Image (cartoon, rainbow, N blue to C red; front, side, top):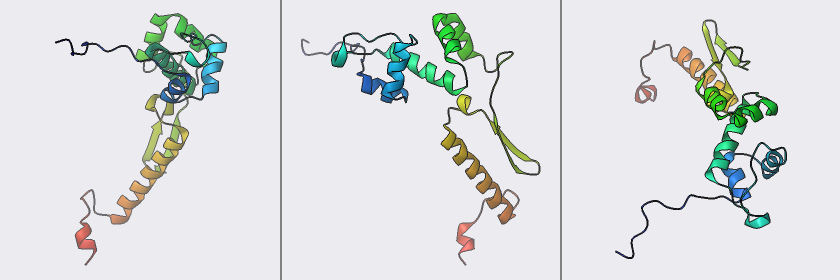
Length: 157
């Protein structure tokens, strides 16, 4: 049994490039967050520096909060108080929260609203979503088949 691998592998660590890519941020942004104290420094120095999965979790939370419009000062408070951060993640709509919602009027009686940060969508993905909804509505209205699936084979006759 000497050749068996341990049942729990070593925790993964990341280089700065790997960490930034996994978090969806630039290296410059990660370095800035370290410089202003939002993110703990890496283990090791210079090119040998390694970041833990906890660094990645922190960066993902920071990115999500900033995309939702939360200031870096408030993010610092959330990170400093884990209970507050957990509450912030758990609360879908905390009292007094300011949210930025996108609202699309597709047609009279048809509207779509979404909050991109909570939905996990980039601005380009929001635009694509709205284009798809608008296109789907136009297609359904054009077909006029009252919710029945289109018979594409019948269309070719």
